[in-house]
Image (cartoon, rainbow, N blue to C red; front, side, top):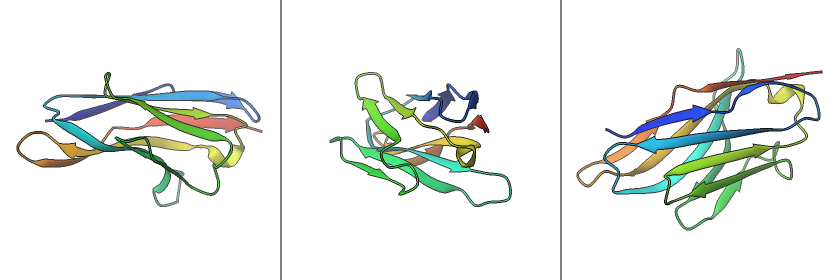
Length: 119
């Protein structure tokens, strides 16, 4: 089973920065896409950014030019550098992994990491 474990969340003032990490482990043959999603209280989970195995990226309009997603394929790890944070970025951030374990496709989520931005 492929697991995703997030780290790097915390409390930061508006305008500050945080870097999230998500490490994948388990029976991994290939991870096609890695992504970050977030869910604020009372709201639906939404896409923040995704990155393919080839390095193609996609961002939500609300985070473009502030957040940067990257991945280290050798370490099966995806990062989210978040700059110029705003109070509206406060949410639980979830890592998502899509790939193939050699037998089955997987689409797995981490447990999430809390990001709180104070005004």
